[in-house]
Image (cartoon, rainbow, N blue to C red; front, side):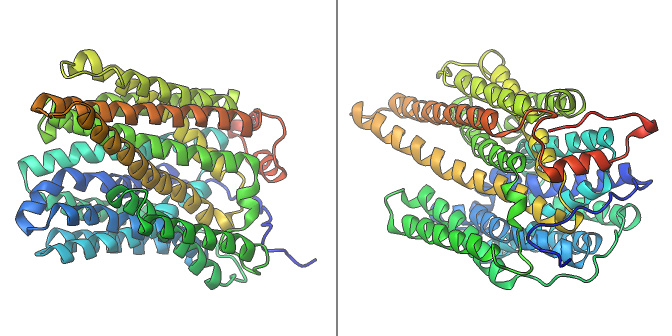
Length: 509
């Protein structure tokens, strides 16, 4: 019987390999490097701008160049890891990312820095889905898989905050260039670990060919989507450049779906996305990624401009959120997810996130960190630690190893697109609210400007809370109940996984 490549079959799971916990350490280190790089440069931007002499209008391209390359090439990077081997792709990604980071750290002009950031995003798109795919195919025992995804999910959620902390220390005590050079040191350690501990894995024979039309359509759609939202952030939602890009992205995305239905070797088999649990997981990651920028962006502004925190103090202020996120990630994946499934866990995480956002709306010009900011940050951390590991584990569970890379890339794409949407949408809403506030309180004074900024942050927090509530309802409706209504692929995967010590493991949704 001829195999239909759009509906991948599930081979028996490979036996767990003996160095899998060292593999987790290597993968976690690489993932941390990619995730924190999205924010570690932010705090260094003013220093880089002063030295290289670029304008405020040009400044956003240092961030956008990375997100454009990263977001548009993720699916291609994930598929390449399936085709040429995960260990080889992982090593190439590490070397390329380190080289691009060294190039950016040595930048002598604005164009040089932007080019290096785009190159970082390109190799990041190769590295991020490969890291998750290595994790997916390495851990086959359910309990161990939960622990591994708890660590990975915690890094995915907390990496941005760690980037702010690290960026503050490096900028204040060394130089802004070390926010890029630090990746070289991390990559060297990860490369040495990957050579020793990451398994090459079995090759698929015969190897399917790369879906060139699907790659062009998907990369083009994602590029235009991220670029359109970036233009919305800088030029406003009414600008033609914004809407032309977004509409064109929608057209290419529709064309991509139609092509995947008939392609002999699809870039993204639609059966992966159509699975109800995986679809809900991808949407949950997207919504959580969008809302997180309501914390990172506006709390950072408030701490530095309102409370006059230094870069290091700003980074340290996020430590309670990181601690609560890591705690929640371990508890959710090891204890609560096997018992209750994502249908219960993810909505609870969304509600916690909404609670933290509403709490932040009560900040005033006289608020203090200990009394007014620490608690909501910890609550948001608990929410993200509940959402991200459960969603990531559910999104990759039951996927054929031949398609683990592209399924992992879809998780990363969801988070990246969510971050782009969140940055553009929340920043635009905040800017509009600030302008309206100043107009209503003319003539403007320094106190009015400060109050307008605070009002704009509050508006962004309310919108982020609304997104979290929408995510709670959506995830509660879409996820299946634990142990009920599993897809055939999911059920076969869980049933086939060996339990440690011969014990029967409960099925997870």
